[in-house]
Amino acid sequence: MNTKHLIKFVQQIYKSRDFIPLHSPSFLKADEDRVLETIRSTYVSSVGRYVGKFEDALCSLTSSKGAVATVNGTAALHASMHVRGISNNDYVITQALSFVATCNAILYTGAKPIFVDVSKKTLGMCPIALEEFLKLHADVVDGRCIYKKDKRTIKAVIPMHTFGHPVEIDKIAKICSEWKIDLIEDAAESLGSTFKGKHLGTFGLLGITSFNGNKIITSGAGGMIFCSSEDLKKELKHVTTTSKVEHKYRFKHDRLGYNYRMPNINAALGYSQLDRLDFYLSKKRELANRYANFFEDTDINFFREPKNARSNYWLNTIICNDIRERDSILNTTNDNGVMTRPAWDQMNKLPYLEDNISESLINTSYLIERIVNLPSNPTFDNFEDIKT
Ligand SMILES: *Cc1c(COP(=O)(O)O)cnc(C)c1O
Image (spheres, rainbow, N blue to C red):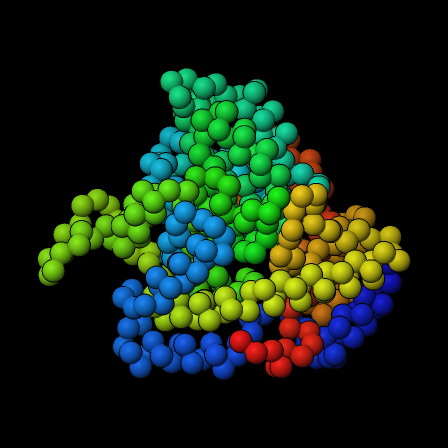
């Protein structure tokens, strides 16, 4: 492929010869107004009307049973595992192709990650690899999934919907329920994506998303936990609010809690941005189609949404033919002001994660050597004209 053509193509889309970022947030006057309102009201922290409004809006968007807003997506993952009693001596199965937050949150609980391979069809956890691992190494004893070698419990499976593309979440959910393991979805990158019409983050016991500045919509920093029951929602709200028991004036805390509640000032921004989610989704789909057309005439594979899935196309992705081609594209684009990025380093190769259990990660290594993310801002034309 001729990288110069790609650079020209991206510059045409963005009508710019200046630096083109991979993904950056965009703000309108409406966002400023909402944030200013919280400042003028003085309710900038954990009390204020926007936290509840943002939670309710996310709940109705995703048809979740309950949503709890948090300070960020990592905290949302940590709190989710905490309320499920995941701690030292437990295992959590995840994928090695992910942002480091997934693994870090597992380590915060004291548990250890186990890595299974991803699928080339979805870029996320492969249900066949998951099931094979369990059949080889695990047993269900007294309603718990036990890792045979050391009899520790495998408490949860955390698949991640890479770059917004849904994994085969129905199959993974079925395996989890057969093997008595909690399913917690890392849908940090995939707000707005659906699988068979159902929103990601709502297939398991719990699911999380993120509103960091680089995600499809942002609250500055922020996260949300999607809960499959009212009880879980109550428990998570409690634990993320330092487990403070409601009282007129006393400070009483009935269990270990965290200061993980999303501040009102962030919720106001997130709530305002949510108005544009549909607009961003349609623009991102249009952009993905343009990229797909461009790469059709090359020998490079542009990654399309998997079967049964509707992706938010958070980060557009190509799969190069080999690592040399990948590095050449990365170098030439970045040298010419078009920002592109490789996948994250493979998690089980990071120094503090390399001692963990992993099965054959053939697809993981294959993809990590070949993935390049392309500029994916949805604001490529007439953005200023949109009305919110
Ligand atoms: C962004 C992200 C998170 C959460 O990140 P925060 O910055 O803590 O909101 C978690 N997992 C993945 C895969 C992510 O991309």
